[in-house]
Image (tube, rainbow, N blue to C red):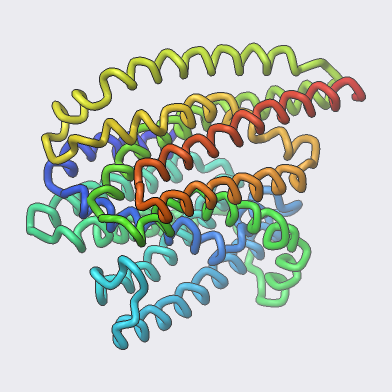
Length: 402
């Protein structure tokens, strides 16, 4: 619930921020944030997932401590590398405009990684209110500071600086309540031993998430290198208002369906029929919303955020097929975890990466940003529809055998 409220705060803040910052400002910030999404996977190696699933509280404490230490080490190495590049003037791509502010990537990775590990520890002990309070504090602080920095004229630096300080505020919230958790004291040897026992997370989960995150951020990691920041900013906001709400809504359904489906599979009850009905309903609602957005996206963006965001509706329309496809696949993404078919899922994500990379290359070669976005959305939609079909087929086949 706290995560949902934090997301809502972030979305509501756009009604102020988009009046202050330009599309070019948001384009640069989105490039900055896309690197965070990818690097934070490497900084914790997804060990935070093992914190919740550990057999004992002692194992959870050991793995949590190891993940926090790993995150600090990776962040310090990243800080040193960025400092050298900034000093020498060798910052790549869009980061040349940020200059020394590029080193904010390191603390952003540090605080984001820490928050994910600490959230997992709180989650293990069912301290949901503490998680909600920290997430809301981070979202609220970030939104306020971005606004203040923007009003001060810090356009290039305001958004990344506000984001870093927002994550820092959330981290303070987590740290303040950490002593209240019933965590046993563990030594370094126990941490290393538990990390070895949970090595499947860096071996299998982290690569899958890395490929998925890198693939999803290709327009901002790669395509943005060849096109104007303003176009990238328009796409970033279109993605925010199309894809992020899909993830927010579908995450709630995914948690409920996961529990019900796992229970049905354990009891040997058929479940594919109810999942199929849910997918049909979700897709139907998504199509209706997409049709409304197709006709009214541009005038709504103009009315809410001003004439500088005219043109965003074109990108919203391009992303709508992907959003419709996500309505069916995201709520079922737990299926491979139930039937232990993560390897096949990873292969599908690799195929998605190849399709998306091809879309980006076509856009670069033709110097057509909108074409790249349309092809990227089409590739994403195709993969999401394929995932939905695969989830339903394997559920039907596996539950028959139970």
